[in-house]
Image 1 (cartoon, one colour):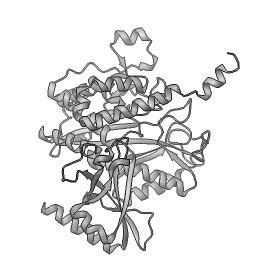
Image 2 (cartoon, helix red, strand yellow):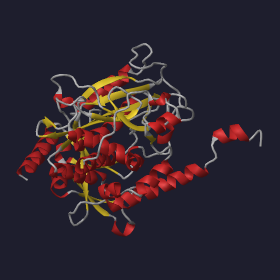
Image 3 (cartoon, one colour):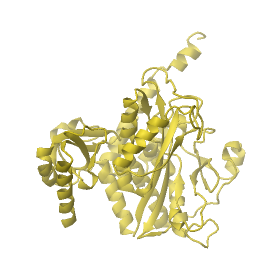
Length: 445
C-alpha cells in the first residue's frame, strides 16, 4: 500500500511538473475497443484516491441500465504523457480498473480477467511474459476498396517502403511512453507492416498493445493515411497476425528451458504447449474474434490452421524458436493463430489458462511436425493425426460455448456477453448479400 501511495505522489508531481492539464482515463470494453473520458488536473488527486464514477450502461458488454454506476480506478503505474499533446496544458493517460460502487472488481472488466488469470499462475509460482508481433496495413483511407501505399515485400527498404517515416514516428512515440520496441519492418503483403514490442509481463503488455494500436492509428492520421488491424483486408495476400511469444518464469529463471532436452524444452514447457494444442479450438473465438479473422486463417498465406507444433516449421500452430547458447531466458513458445484485432486482455488470459491446464494435468505433447503441412494432402494429415482450427466464427463460438476452461477463465459475465455478441455478428454476416454473390449469380440465375 505504501508503494501505491508513492506512485500516486509520483503521478501528481509528474503531472504538475510537465504542465499537464487533462488526464484521459482509459479502459477496454469486452470487444477490446479502447474507451476513454477525461478529467482535469484539479480532479487528479481525488481520482487517484477514490476513482471516477461513470455510466457503464452504454459500454459494450458492461451493465444493464438499472445497475449502470461504475467506478474507473486509475492505475498509477500506467501514467504516461501522450507525446502528440501540446507542451502547454498537455494530456496524459492512465489505464483503469473498473470497480462496482461498493469497491469490488467489476466482473465485466477484461483487465480484471487477466489479473485473475495471472494470480492463478502466481499461485503455481509463475510469472507470465509475452511478446506479441502485431501486423497491420496502411491504406490511403478507410473508404471503399483499400488503396495500398506501396508494393513492398518482406523486409523491403525504401523507395518501395513508403511508410518508413510512419514507422519511425510510431516507434519514437511508443518509446517516449515507456514501451520497448524490438523490431520494425515491412511485412510480406503490399502496404503491410510490423512493429514488435519487447517482451514484458502480460498485464503491462496488454496495456502496451492497446496503446500501440492507438499510436499506430494516430501517427497514420497525422500523415494523412489510415492504419488498420483488420485481419484480412485484401483478398489474395497475407492477412495480419499477432504471433504471440510466451514464457513462464520463476524469479529470473525461465522454466521452459532445459539444457539436456533435444529441443531445449523442459517438461513444463512441453506440458504448456500440449495445453495450447488441446484447448486451441475452444480459445480461438477469443484470439480470433471477428468474422473476418477466419478469412486470414486459410492454408497457404503463412496462417497457422493446423494443430501441431515444430521448431523450424512456420505452417504449424505452435513454433519453438531455436535455442541460442547463452540465451536461456529467451526460450519461448510462439502461438501463431491470434490476430491483432483481438482483445489482448482476454487473449492473453485464455492462452495462459490453456497452458497452465496442460501443466496441471501433465498433458502429453505429440511429436513435432517439421514437414510443410500446407503441402500435405488430407489423407497424409489424417495419418499424422493433424486436426485443423475452426474455419469460421460460428464454429469457433460453438467450441467456446462448450468450454469449461474458457468459462472459468472469463467468468460468466464476459463469457455469456461475448458469445451473445458474436452470435449477433455471425447472424448479420450470414444473412448479408455480398458483392461476390451479386457478381457471381445475378447475371446467370
